[in-house]
Length: 107
Image (cartoon, rainbow, N blue to C red; front, side):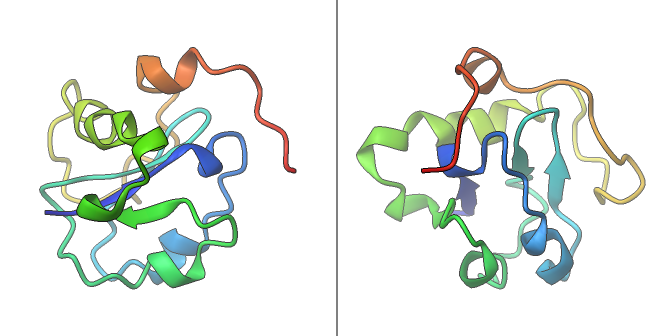
């Protein structure tokens, strides 16, 4: 099990979660942040600091955002497990699910 970043993060990328993550497992894509499922230690430090409530424990992802669970895993298919987001910086791509979304605006 791991934490998942869902649709509210798309085009927002506040990054407060990155500052809280003790293991540097939150990576930055072009339009969203992603939690590496193999690097996450399930500490939950990221969840309460997200200002748009985009982070959920895998079993608690709302049904309308269930596809984001797979998107968070599949985002890492091409980059593997780098062992920390800081050394990579911005990854200039997104999972196809996120890339296909229309621009998100804050409500």
